[in-house]
Image 1 (cartoon, rainbow, N blue to C red):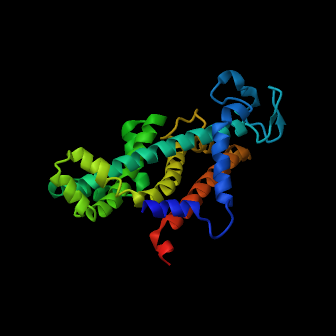
Image 2 (cartoon, one colour):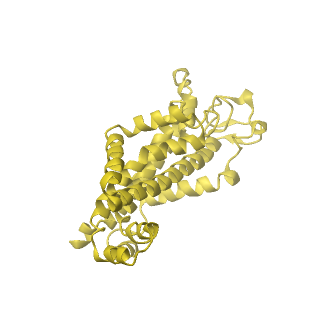
Image 3 (cartoon, rainbow, N blue to C red):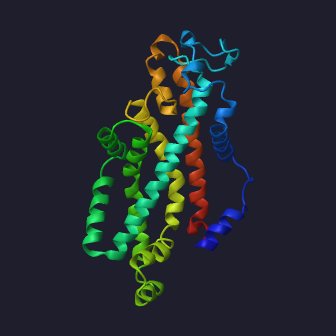
Length: 291
């Protein structure tokens, strides 16, 4: 499996080396990293925000000596700056929550397969219960219980996503626990923790590699939805979801730009992540290499 993954990443037999989704996603990441250097203002700093310039249309001249290329929101924050800093929050929240959910879910799944009996029953009944509910509902219940805030929305997204990884990992691990190398590890009386994390887990994570990019895009959408509902990132913080929510009340007055441009940025981010994730999944699928 390791050789398959490496060969799939190195070989590009079809199509150009770069694709539009890859370029777009790389651009988003670079903009997020460079936001403090290229953003016209810091939307966190009240000293750089001029309240009398609130809801300025795109192309309006700003008092700070620069052009509001995409206008300002209802608080007087530059839309370009809000998008750039919002990308940072959206990417940090989604990547952190997806990575933690993958670690927890994979560990729970292989533990269920290794120990079996009541441990397997308890973990999988919890997984079945959670997967029977819509992910957004689980996230809503979690965030309402935990309260708003960036750290809490990360925890809520972890709670909403771990079960998917657990089910996949358990299915793969069940086929691994009876193999000779696992029997040898038990005969050598290796510690249980070492057997799970050094032997069983590394051989059970291959399917999760294809799932992680897609779940990151899912996490971006969940964070934006919760923030739009006022339950995620606080409305005074420039995440893409809260930026769209900030302008929702101004749509009927014709101030479309406050929600439109952050919404387009959010759509592009989710689309690029999902397309790149689907491309990774397709290239790492062993069935595509067997043909």
